Length: 340
Image (cartoon, rainbow, N blue to C red; front, top):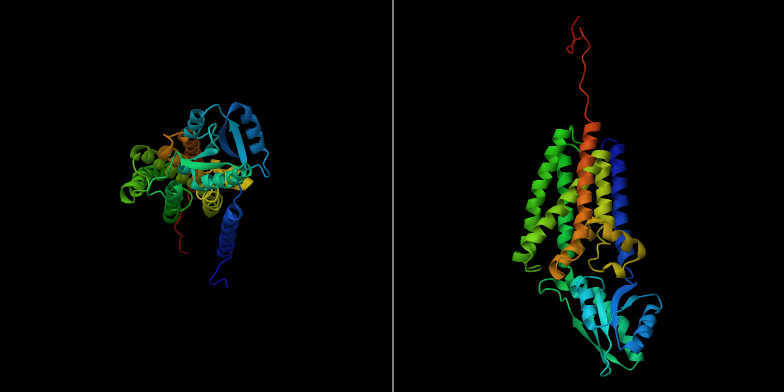
């Protein structure tokens, strides 16, 4: 066995197995039973019934809604535009037909969940409602998932290029100068990956049309932040750092990113970590750029800049600390053995 698999390789195999099982468990844990939890929704109705309606919606079993009273439909639409709510419920004062306003661009599954929640409530009151999509997904953006796919591609590219560099030259930079060269190469790669991803998703497939400039700079930031974080982990922990990067970006980051199921439909753990990990930050920012006039992009960019700065500084610090010391040859000693 030792001739074919060394103890170190055996330990790496066990680590890979743990990551693989963690990946499976994370996806099943996040997606096996999507349940609405306090979906923010604006509610407007004739004044005498508004407070009672909001209280009734907020007291539903399991707390699927976070209903917020607003004075008018215009106020509700502004809240949707500012991404404060996922939808709005407008009660008619003229007849028994109300309206549910959703925003598929923020995640089609949340709109479907709102329809499922309000349908039995309206049936109980012998009322009906029509559904209006205020932010419909673009024709090439099936179910609003293109933002997630693009963000995931950028994140994967960021940590893969860091892994590729470490595989060719060692996971730990030999000195700060080499670390700077790696970071500079990563920056150039990020700029190319940013424009490339924006062009492929838009010009090539028509999934995300327009917004080329904003998608370019944000994609470059997402790639650079993911790569810098991976480089720092590798510099500090060697090949174990690669596993930590996969744990953060894939095992935890992908299921919690809000792709197929946005945060209000995820279990508590994934709902909590998603908004702080690069895949979730990227997904929400891309949706904000494409459908909501860049609302929420600033927060994602600020956190990703923190990832990039921390990763770059960490890589340089570790490179300086672990820099090999020069070999000092004692006087009158020769490195060449002398035959006797």
